[in-house]
Image 1 (cartoon, one colour):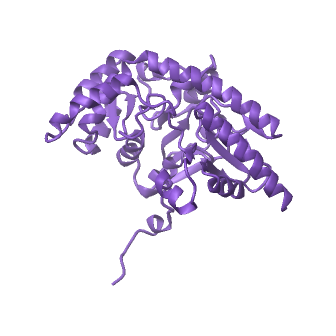
Image 2: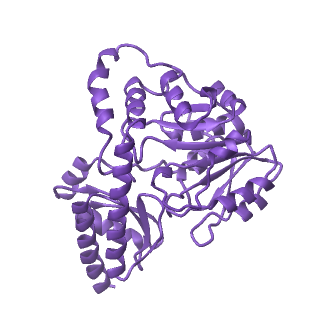
Length: 364
């Protein structure tokens, strides 16, 4: 008898994380491949986190702290909230899935942008609920249209700010206006994975909404500027009520011991964060100029990546760059996303892109 799988689950395309660099090098016959596809911090983790990891392995035979007590306390102290307002997950992806599990019943709705972090849609469909996708305007969330898309069946509204993959952000004024119009039964998920990279002074103070007791969750992560993507630690700040519901469905021991200790150390390393931010700004300026010199337009970004138009089939450009050992991300159509790397990586990317575009243009 064939497996009986829910038709929505059967229709999903699994998220593609890409292959390890060593495997790609073997398959393509290239060496020294560079990965500029996943928006990681190319400068690595905090030295304080590395130091902690060296001494944390002696307790690996014990289960981790199931409530991440000390990490939640550190986050609460840093962000001036109560510990019971802090959620910790195996990456913020897990918290997204837990929010879906806690608040969405089959057939209910979650509003999101049509070009944003793919895990919102996958999590909602995986929960047998309905993603309501609202088109971006000028590559930015159209908050007015998203509010209009809310119905009595809406339970969650996702706002990725800055948005992945476009790098754009919604302003404090726009977010204030949107939240003031939403009914109380909608939980707003403000995904701020790239929060530490933002330079625009009009960026919202989203924690203010939490302190005011509004039904919202602010998601952040240690996977980006903190450089701990391999350990998978994300966190959310929300009301005690929402936190209580999410913890009802959270599995025990969901964040491992090493991850908790490294995250605590990284959180205290303001110097590493500031250094990473400064180098990201400098290298982003270099890449923007390089793309401009190639006649390509990119969307102004508040994150650690650029989303740009290659003027032809982006998949062909992606494949050609891959053969040169340069890994970027093709999203859709003619648009490609590239992570800001170290100087040598960014030079290599621009050189490879120039060559690839010249070859592909000549054979069109």
